[in-house]
Length: 208
Image 1 (tube, rainbow, N blue to C red):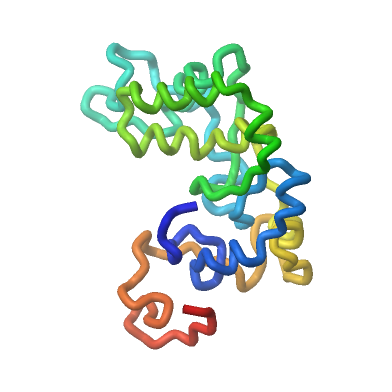
Image 2 (image 1 turned 135 degrees about the horizontal axis):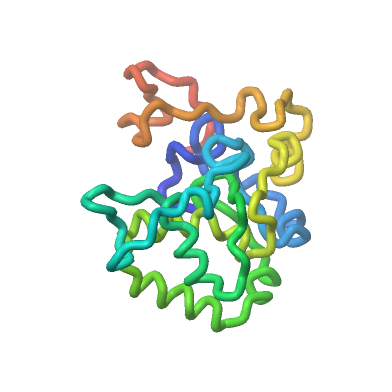
């Protein structure tokens, strides 16, 4: 998870990470191996990247720009995947709820040889890609690294119930009422969670 308690991507009505950690079903994480802490599908599901179709034409230097235009994660994902996962077929589609917030079991971590982690560390240190791009490559690879299908988008109802014990929500496949709204801005306002987007007082009932 990210270091700050309140952040726009936290899957909580108040964007609060504390209830996420307090209510997390560790038994389910152990049995599943990997669990994305975001149940909402926006952003990243059902498919975020089509590595073969989205790939940018190969050019000199292997950097993160193409004729002065900054490349996107989608465009560099295929090449990065091939470098990070040699011998593994690049998937046709990749989908997972965003933002690199997940829980993983000890067994899932140790199922990978030490050499894999060394290769990934060295790639991060040596890649010419900017930090935001190299980070987003891993954002859409962690679930694959820890044993899930390239498209890993369980229903929101299943996710909230299994991970947090919230089993009586009114849901569609991709969302459940009252849980998460994608904010207009990535930075929460000063005074959040007690002060809202327009400076209004919010009825925040969580703990400080």
